[in-house]
Image (cartoon, rainbow, N blue to C red; front, side):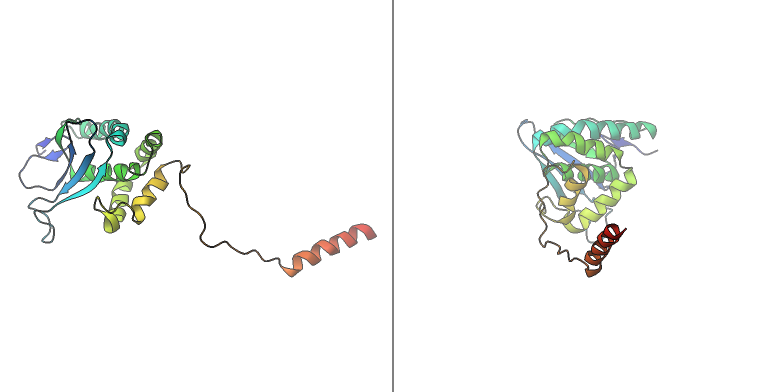
Amino acid sequence: MSATVNFGAPVGFGLHHFYVKIPKNSHEAISVHEDYGFNGDETKRETTECRVVLARELWTKIKDDARRDFNARLKAKKQTTGSWTTGVVKLDRFLGRELCVLAWAAEYATPAECSIICQKWLALRPEERWWLYAKTAAEARLAENIERGWRKALYCALSDGSNIQLAQKKQPKHKKKPNEEMQTFNLLDFIENS
């Protein structure tokens, strides 16, 4: 078993991990970053990318559910557990992906919707969260990609949907079939003549 810090992040220098920057000022936004370290593939080696910037009020609503879920799984692996403290908090690369899915869903939410988002996120298996991360990151992995495809879809999928403002762009046309009118007419004739 290798040594870890915070939420399962490897202690070794230059290893792939995520981290959350939590400012001391309780009104400032938090940010989640992916650090590819020195062991990343050639295109990403020594690269750090900001995945999401989240309003502090929303972070406050989701952080405890994420902490409890991550710590329960770390305990099962007999690893040390973590807590969200000011400064930089590191995460295992897989837990970081899962946190991004939760934060991406919450970035569109109201504080009241965050509990529903957390419940639905907790109901997902880790593998499902990883898949959602991969789909979202392929198209909108950076913090500034907020208005793109899967980033919006995560909110729709994990919220209750009450604030989703989607309108059909093209209304379907319904055409009556000629046989429908004739069948009704013939049935009425049958009843009257019986």
